Image 1 (cartoon, each protein chain N blue to C red):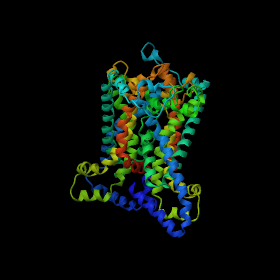
Image 2: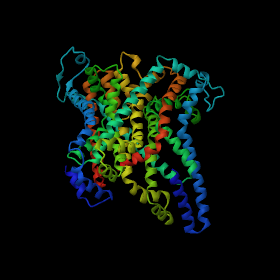
Image 3: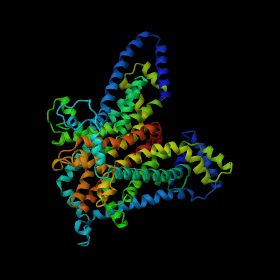
Image 4: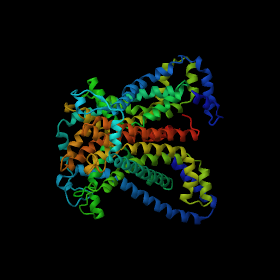
Length: 321
Length: 299
């Protein structure tokens, strides 16, 4: 591959490069032939080919077919519809509403998660070990909570009749799941709650790895917290921040459990649907498997775009894959 | 964390000594105190949902359905847990969940270990392509694949069995596991490998007796993610386990309490507690490795 040569040609960015070069030269002398890596990769490739790539191919295929309950039960033969399903999908105004809601919701979640995670990471560096440990443990608890139990607990917290939140805020019997925006807000809180710890812990670890002299110098120059973050930490943490942002985008774009559980499968009249839940409902609730698959393909294409951006950013950073 | 503590403490002292003025200390202190109080308040808010979950699980039914919820209980009861454990085959569902998550964790750890070794310890054609494939595979919206996966499992005759839950999760957790394990495998010095071969160790021997134990802690950290996603799954359980209810898993049992018109909140919270505690324990045990693992996934 050309990338391998790029790596070798790039001037030694890290001390491990020469070692690797030696390893490469000695490669043939090692036991095992050139097929050894493929032997190690075989189980993974078999599993991925059979259970990931083949289903994706099937998903694409179904999205071009007429495929409903009749075809599943074998009552009618499957027919090829070409882009018919897509045309139907794109002609449906609900699809555009859901797509917009998905994008806005995911963007809000990513921004909320990153802001919370990064500011708490900076906060962690400014406090003594005991409060730091307490905050870390609390965050670990939120992180470890399975999405499904997190969802039920948050719904209960915001329950109009028996939840403590409405009592504390004096909202009476305000139903959070009734309105579109408040329902999305509720899910947003849960998503940020369970995903900020990853950002916080990773960013904090990253800040710890920044040479102390750099931060000291900033502090001596009288830089404010914000200024230190903006001009010193953030640029040095760039690779880490890119990774966690991309991970957040991927996860938040694909949110399923929270929406499904907290809004009862997409909210009143589908007002809280996001693409993922929409695809599932189309396929399994109304047996329109081909439409559901077409939505899945649309998601796949969007996420593939995110992957490409990610790869580009990695390359620009000079990261070796 | 102890290392960070020392370093951080040392930094404060250094700064104070450098400025040499006590004034600086006085300015710093109230700031830090405010920051610490803020941090503790945030910790309370973050931990509150979990506290409320456990609390509500132990509250007697009357208190859970009280119009004036209070953050304590004077008469803890196990009634909610009793209802949960008596519902259907709860022990069976729990065992199923453990079996499914356990199989996925072990299988994906072993397969990912081999694959991560291949892509970090060897240079070969298509290596970069494969890495990009593993990266892209993480983006796949799992839920959308329920549709073709359903047909695949039906054709396998695996519907209604635990295999229909194990296989998809294995496939979905592999890419991230490989991606994250790379960092751990890379961290093992190449010199060690050279030395092992000079000492006459075979490749297999090096792999399982030297590399594997060294990477093991990372393997455990990586497993947390496979474990959580599998443990959490209700979509495949809902879609693939249709008629043979005894093969159902924990989340399905939880949703039984939740789905009703008037949810049995005590039951929901007790079931949620039962579901969350094993993950919490797993997490606390490996969290230190987790951080370095994510750092490794970055590089």
